[in-house]
Length: 428
Image (cartoon, rainbow, N blue to C red; front, side, top):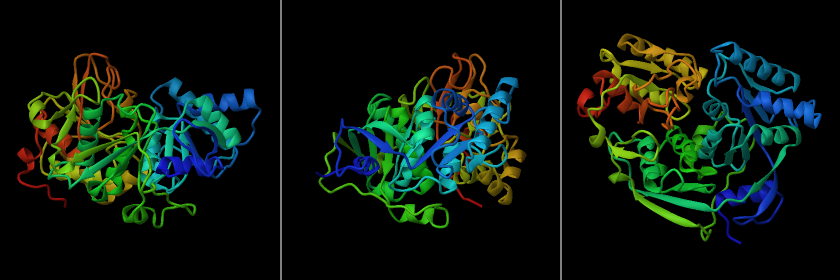
């Protein structure tokens, strides 16, 4: 029976020769992740209901302090303490403290902990990010995480796979973020519900790993179970010197069966933003240009890796943030922050008048360091703009790529970057 990449991974993990959409399988997990909002509850279930004193494999678990950390209040400090105690008592090898890790969905790939062909779960909806590295990665709740941490296995329903083929290459100024926003705008936030999103085509082959991680990160914004991309030279180059274990990539069979195939001309995709109040409210930049902004946020697990910061800094170099507009820049990991410091990018942001924060989820989920008030308008490089996501339910949030965000911070309104930097973007 021919299989997709997702089906092959679930077949291997469940010890079967083949699986198909709708099959229920008990699958062995290769790697699991939890953070300060999900580990305390999972840990309580493990201890009190399952009697576990150790995780199933101390080298296959990551615990990351990233959502409300550094602690924003007393309650958050308590969650951080419980998370810290769990990792220590359970003997977790991959524990990332404040100032050492960052946002979990950047930390795990950059540390080589999630690898091709594997089954990965994380107690966070954006755990689908890791599928850019040719694995099956899905978010689970704290109760399911407790089962995985105790037993190393979990039940899965094999999802139907939707195939997305991208022809040609992205145009100037258009990034992976624009492409995935365009796709979600076409299929809606419910268009891939509980299914696998498999991305392929010439355009994907030209997108670097950071861009691919952005694509799979937002699979959940289309309702998908997981996003996945094939293994190629880009994947191999990214993992060289990073991978903590040996791995076995998977490829879809030539005659694999897909529920539906979507084809896009990447060259025709414009700079795309999402208007309030949903990621599928896609609009070209021409449709929303001129929208006045109170805040610009460059951060989150979607678009605050080092490449994102380099491009944003190239726009801001020698320029100032507009009066009455605030720019908040949050690197997605400690390693990204270190690279930004070495390359002089932090100085560029500070000189422009931006606020530079610790590596945290922070403003993305309306947690801290950038919460929005009633009626405020924000342009964000994050993944969600549902009512109340970044603060007050009456705040308005637009989503964009980091270059558009940086250019808009300079003008104080949504702006095409060429209007700020000229014909092309030049990285120093």
